[in-house]
Image 1 (tube, protein in one colour):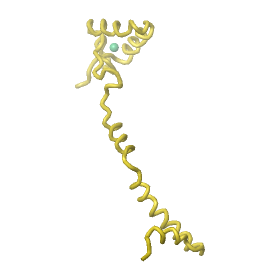
Image 2: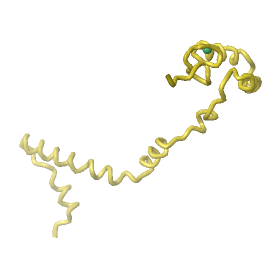
Image 3: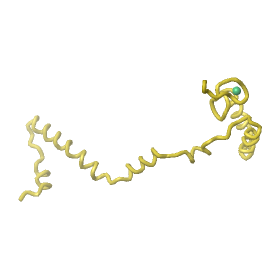
Image 4: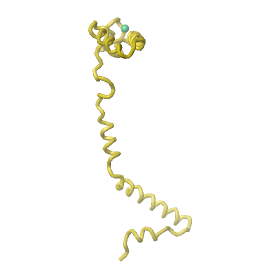
Length: 116
Ligand SMILES: [Zn+2]
């Protein structure tokens, strides 16, 4: 078994080296303290081996590769995307027009193609 155990009991470690029970007790005790004392409280627990230090120091330090890639995509010029989406839409509209018998708006596509 490679499962870690709680620092304070035999239960499976869930967070910060503690089981659910002990972690919730820790969280309760921590939340009962004023904010400026909470870090000190954690440090004391860590020093006494009652708690494991958190690896990522807050969610802000967590690696954000996905967000980076997402930002990259969001930042790319959308012209290409719109163009690619526009064509099938126009074709479908044309087909619908053919089906219903109404003439497709050819003037638009003609002006874009620049007839010689
Ligand atoms: Zn425990």
